Length: 445
Image (cartoon, rainbow, N blue to C red; front, side, top):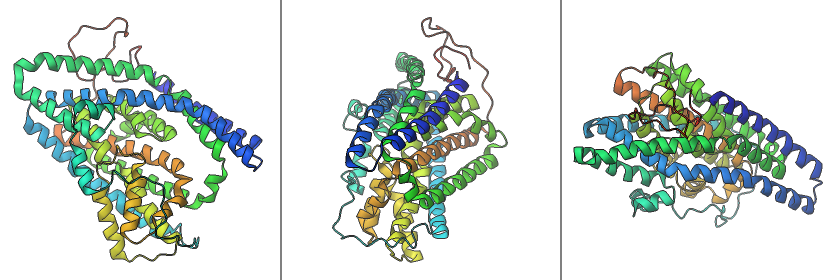
């Protein structure tokens, strides 16, 4: 099923490009009426992709909660939890520094904004990006949920992680009396994986609709206007992939190539929908197939979604310096390094903020005397850049989970193939981790 779904997603992506481009070419005569008509048509297609993303959001909170609590309980003790958490954070910090530094290096090497000569806007001009949730005080108070139910209702990943940590540690501490609750969590994991399998069947249609809507409304010209900027950014993403996978090779060994093969589907899904959340369940499945213990994968992956967004990190330095270049604003090396360190701190934990990368960039620009309205230069192509960022975030988090598992266990072993009963005839065998995490509700790998 996994291979077929990957093929169908790829077909949906190609068809979306063809249909969207054809609609724009046939209906766009340059008039406001044509633009309005194309926007309406795109809106109809967008309904499908919006419904799919809502289905994904529907399962993310209970899936993250259940798998994270299960992982903590199966670790068995708080010492192991602290050890795994410390190793994960160490990797996240290192990967973030590499990503930010690479963006800074490449934007100065390629200089995509030099020569554009855009007039510097009024300092009071706004970018239109909401920064209401940005700030140290807001971030620190936002970490702890006022209610676990409220955090799940709003899909606040970081708050769900905090709530799950408390529940998982408490279940471990209570011991024998909490075993029925632990078994219920195991059952909830299996149920959510089955629901995920159903939802993922709609992925190819959602990919087709999302790509069609974007190209039908905006056309290929939006890409051409900033082609060099986009091209050099994607070169940076490719280099970052090589660095991350290379680091994984040094630590995990040659088997890292298998991980790359296993994550092809979540990569394609994240790229085509421009959503890392859409790829979360399939990334969890890929890690299970690769041999990352469920207790580690279900703990590291949710943390990575808040603290290890490598593609977004690269974008933040790249886009910030690009805007300065486009306005002819010279920044000293010391200023750029200070910007990198600021981004390193302010970018953590904003995964739940809409358009998180733009929010962080907006706040950073004003801090360094760059007009905030400069974001308007890249808003038109941000969706296409977000596709690459989302896919890179999947790579970074998958490699992080594999590396932490290698550090923790010393070796990674392929799990034995497990045949599942169909959903209408549930198995009553004891729970065994994330067996069958291929998310195919019909069973089988």
